[in-house]
Length: 143
Image (cartoon, rainbow, N blue to C red; front, side, top):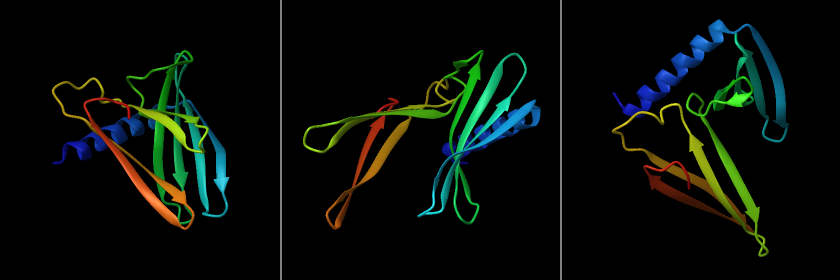
């Protein structure tokens, strides 16, 4: 089987275990875009010993759901080795463009002897045109 598929199955299985063991669950609507009918939601699961998990996901008008980020906190501190998330930093430039860096953290970061490819893409709108740009790196977690 594809290695990436196995990683996602593993992450999904771990998430299901956490969901089944949760003491409390909080569901919050973070953001809603009525034009495209996409909701951004956050659900928090609270466990024993001051451990909680925040899962951010998107839901479209057909109730298709995509998990975006999973952050696990232990005593209020983000556990980066158990979580699956990214940090995006953007700095506006004087010419109207932006300079940025995205750093990706995964619960599979501790697996040794693997090749990791990270590709980041974005769409840029200019007048009536759309330009799509991608950046690809190997064995690093930021672009």
